[in-house]
Length: 283
Image 1 (cartoon, rainbow, N blue to C red):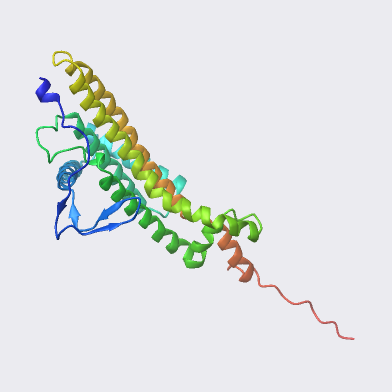
Image 2: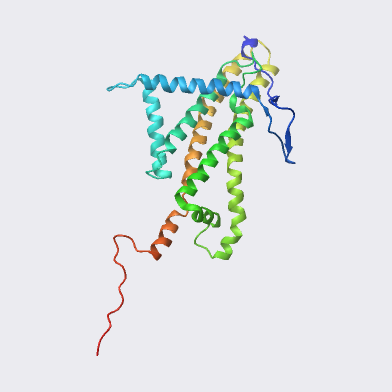
């Protein structure tokens, strides 16, 4: 039983070179741009496959009338995501719904896989226990957010976002530009570290339980911890990542109202009458 439940020691994910030991030393971190973490790719592929199988299985069984239990759960997830997007972003930002719902479901499945014993193979580990995995997802989200912000606000409005708060004098707003730029840079870091830290901490706790406790009793607290960590903490982390994704898209629209008002002062809207000059009185 102990051998079945024990997991491998958590630690660094070994790199597999593709075209040699090519790296870029960024002082705080060494970036290997010509290598892959094979265990993360395998674990991610398993989670992606299960996510697609689940989604297509439910889609193939869609029938009018009373839905099945699994269909009801997924419909609730999509409906809830749609409501969050409408409240936090906009009515017309429908492309955020499949993005956020897919991210949430993928992270949920990837986290729940950790309930099973994964220590039998060095290539199978919790996918989100690797910072490369969580940082990649966070970077994709943030890049899409920047593109959406430029599309909605235009390049001028997008750059103006970094001068928040808008109600203050332009001299004071100029002082906030570095802070606003830093906030945007930190977003993918915090988004990825939050998910990675929680999953890695759970993996470390499992390893300590199976290593320090006697083999006779180690499986009892191990199963109890996994039930809490995988199904509760894993679910919460999937929800938080999905929620922050939606919130960041909402932040991408900051300054839109001010931009519309600024353009409105220069050009009257279709429903407004153009100002007329005062009549000239003839004597």
